[in-house]
View (cartoon, rainbow, N blue to C red):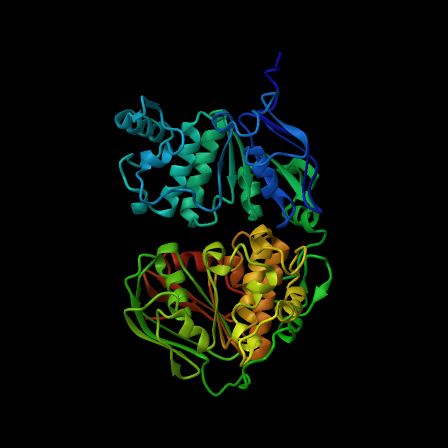
Length: 533
């Protein structure tokens, strides 16, 4: 008979191979009812594979999953798995064109004689929302919801199945600070109600705030399980990566292997296509009176300049227009008015191809959507911005040419892959981002637009990527526009511009920047830094 003290969910001796890659090595993890367990580790440590197995999406090669002490349902028994455990993934699984109720019961709607009882489905959705204090109507189209509300819909969908274990994978990646605190309140409410929660995040301060215990994975194995109160953040980082990473703005940068790689090594790995050197004669990037009514966040007369080798951060709340500014400068979105100039030449907005020809490199906010082609290999993705150079006048491009061109940057950025032909979709999130950065830098851009470049990336890879971007700008005289709501990213910047409701609100010019002052400025409460009035 099953003991009432058995964990709500348990992984026992889980092993998993993908070809020659040993992804999980005898993993043991337990989550008790009414408990929040943090799961942390470097990109590629095995966290996503473990979540896939705990969710019933993958079958382990060895070991087993147990719920309340009993073996998990058989593979393919989707409804049985949904009744025991539910996962809210980092990337939204909500269908925008459907209503809240339709999304909550997507894939498990009750039907009699093939007919759906829509009234019952909407009522049950409203009951779930009311029970957990979620103020969202069941009939609202999800395309009309905020990012925070979409996440609530995903949590409600998990609760609708009756599951008493919830896996939250990077749940704060797209949330503002206020929404993060509300999420924490909801998680605490779920835990108090007896739900077992596994919380996966690269933001270690969140793990300390929300989790009672933490599990650290490294190279597919559990290397530490302990109460969060028993260690410091530095100790946790040391356990994850073996050493505390250096400050991103201070070369040399700590790489995932623990060795030191100077930022100059990244610049040296880029085949030079530009003839102009860094110059102080004038700004490399000029934005003049940029306006747009974008749904991502409008802009109302935004102007700024970035000189050669300068790193300028732009930050603000999600609705402030930060990502919009980056997208317009990169040509990924059109502006309604104003101008973008690169080295004195006007660049037409809304044309990514023209922006790239003008020397604008682009690291998008959503790497899965715009950063790489998942089924193509590492080398092919990394070199897709320079295929015209590699193919020459005859238009012929050999795979060996791609591999040789991609190898120096791949090594400088410590891309971990089985080989140059491994599909990027199979890599960890951190390595996918490194490939995206390699694709951007290999074109030798005059301007780099990076939007939240470290989202979903572990602490060591974050240091490496930020150091690579800043180092490339300094070494080559490029201009770096870093648009991010991640305040930790801004430590490498020479200046930080704060947007509020689509307008420049404040500018900070003296590093290091005060975190509390930045937060106050982003919320439009206190005008700090250099007065912009």
